[in-house]
Length: 172
Image (cartoon, rainbow, N blue to C red; front, top):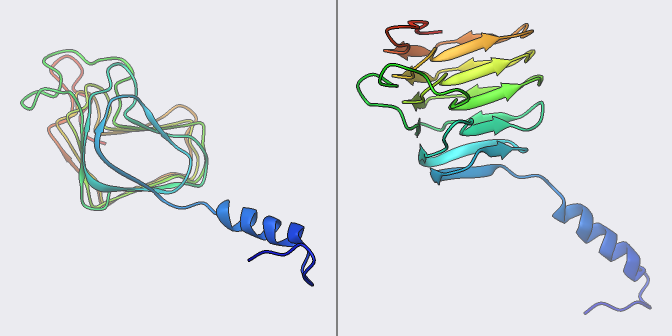
């Protein structure tokens, strides 16, 4: 029972509770994503993800310094299982996008597959890491590092059947 007349003022207790409640926790991701999911805290897949987003990224980093852990699960887009895109890519339809950020981490094991654009894109991103991820049957590159991106680490990844006949940009 709280008493305002105790040796600890009531205001002290309220401030303490607010500080504890504001602590960031990892965001758990699984199931179907139907609109771009912008992560603003460290996040992890806790189940396979089916992405039904059209013309926009499935998962986008919303801040620098975050980690997305694929945790052994798959992130699957709307692409054709045989070709990734049936001949032409769909603008903006990227599996995971980090744009204009610093020190983001995308960590496997896990698979990013069947996106009708890039599987993973680092755009104008510095100091990022993509490690231990399998990118498969994405319409464009499985992993694409572009723009003013610098000092990124891309290591121990596997690329399978990415690209298409008129833009066979392929793997990483």
